Image (cartoon, rainbow, N blue to C red):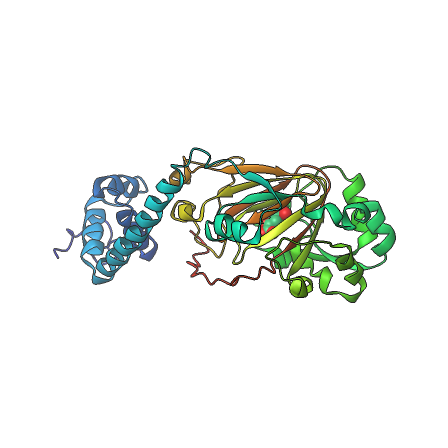
Length: 352
Ligand SMILES: O=C(O)CCC(=O)C(=O)O
């Protein structure tokens, strides 16, 4: 490759084809080319920061000829192939005129449920499951405070100070007495600042064991003997938001008190959700930033509000964002008697 002409005004720097273009720029060039940005638009961006145009053109050429870039292109083509397979299957799903409706059903047979919702991979709300649950009478927040208020629980707190509160959930753990937390929930008004989430593990604590006795009939495909190990308790004010993510298993989520709005996005749309880190998407379905995340525009969102006694079924890998519309108490469980542990490869790109 030709070296750029020597610049007599820059005596301390030897001339180099990548003059002033450091490793960050080279990575940027590679990423933009992989997104099929034209060389000229990249040169414009680079020269706007003061870089010499000729050096920019040479660096772009050098990156494209680099065998490492060529290998990255091949992997990109494979990824694009898989994304198009998922996208085409999704087009078939969306042929269903009722695709965006979350059905509500009552007392399905085990076989029908497994076929249509588990293997068919569709979210659904089951009505009536909790009709015989003592929890429906006994889990009003003030009643819980009377029974368990003296016990300590772990909540997620100070979430307002951190946009990535769910990703950073371990840093937000705080221990409080349940009575104090419930008082805040009942009298503090709507807020997303603190929330008693599945991570609290309270159902594994001996003091909270009586809560499990308040759970009655389960959906037909649940294994009762594994309830204690697979269940989670959720309590918070109106306004809590669990941001868009997918789980690694399927679960049921029964609303006991108050209501939550569930928004779902198909797993086949994963390539459009910027899932660069673990199980999270940066897309806020309430205020999506399509300038920053253009591929997410037009992705259909399914929405349903679950009220007291409703049980949401979360099928495999479906993305979901959950907002409490009122003070809310709910109970989730993943003790399905079908295979329910799934591994996912993670991109683990934390700063993209
Ligand atoms: O209820 C919530 O806030 C979130 C529930 C959820 O995302 C889950 O169980 O995976």
